[in-house]
Length: 234
Image 1 (cartoon, rainbow, N blue to C red):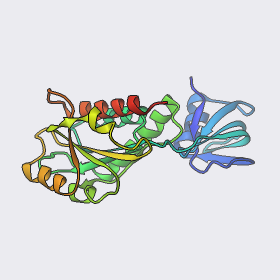
Image 2 (image 1 turned 30 degrees about the vertical axis):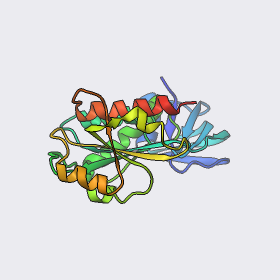
Image 3 (image 1 turned 135 degrees about the horizontal axis):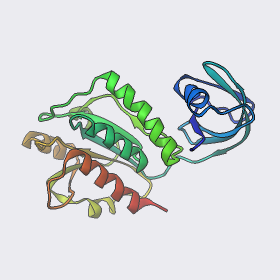
């Protein structure tokens, strides 16, 4: 079992206290004793090898033995997506984390039928931490609040909108600067409205195609994330 724990306020030296769900998992589920060596990460590029000093009922203290800092990836992907029904969104969030998506933005669209509450998003933020632990990701994916399409169009950087009428995503992606933050918007299962596509074009967005089949929301997100990773890895 992986001995890896998320510690948001991780120092580069000295001691650190861990509480909350991560401390509970270490003490009550894994039952790790003092003297055990584990890995801590802060989700912002810092990873530490740390020794457990004390294990309490609600908190664990560590002594930092060594640290390593990973730079922020130069090519970053933001995915703004309509929200699928049920546990399909949970699966989407987990896989987007594993594939290195920098930020996931739940979109409120004209034909969207799911509008997750803040409590749902908070639960998914914990799921992101678990996915980071499993995949050994050191930069945690951000999960933004639910956002209107009009607000998304005002963001800086390249914006690509997935729609069958667009150019192939791989062709468009290769024209963008290697070191850039790209936002890709995925619409609802009923598709974008003509007005939404026109507004996106007028705002300077490029319309991209993900192939000649109609993909479900979560499939489209994974396709975009996987292709972006393959085109930018190394």
